[in-house]
Length: 380
Image (cartoon, rainbow, N blue to C red; front, side, top):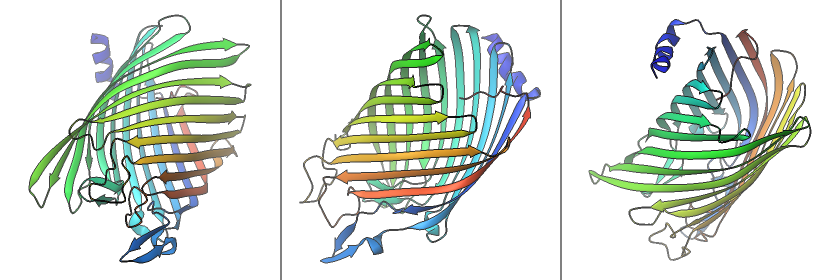
């Protein structure tokens, strides 16, 4: 333990062995930025998507700086990221994000490693609060987390990790309230790693228990309300190299959220997904289809005659990323995401909890500059 503390204290005084700088810029288009339903009925009149949808071209800019130092048994890494999405025709939906992540690990032996992560995120985004109970659109926020963990092996082919997370997330205030939550989570994952003819095979399981304590301060009532939510996560996953270039990953995740106060916001969720990855000498491609089934314990709508007994969402998602390296420093890339949410809420006068479609796609260029020894920079 003394060696761990000493290494952390000496790190800022030591020249780091490698630094990487990444700059991305892309141009694209997003459809239905505000997650609007196809239509709503207001005072007996139908308002259709032409008036509801916010569509626009956008420009994404991203800067990331990562630097790392390695010793015989320990690693220290710090990374700062700044990103911004600017909409040409819908500036009210512009968003920016700043991340600062630090990571330290110490290997006690070949089979056991201690890890510690400290992360801070600040996101500026104009969200939408609804009825003092639910966010119709995500709000901007500030988030800080501490993540100690421990990696070890139960056998030669086994890899097991135990992680603990503690943190706080504070949302930007709205006209109605201030909102924040504290989070505490413990998780475990274990997998079997096999190599056969230089081809990788991985199978494993994971689980987590999370407690979120929401704190709401309502301006009009001058009152504070606490809402404790508990999450139980279970999952199985696999990763199989089809050959030296293609890899197929799959997972099945189960999540149960318990509303410990009034059972209104609890739900059951099931999420199967696939990820197909191609890694060539100068080309990279990833496509990820997913389905999410989420069924709430209630309708979430207290005063609606058209509300179902239990609100249900079905999400169909598809994302892709393609990059082509032009030189050691430059590469072109294309990215896209599609989300189709189907809801059993048939109340045509409501904006939230309804079905919607959202998609975006863009192309861009990436510049990478590296200082120091090659192939020493790790991944978190």
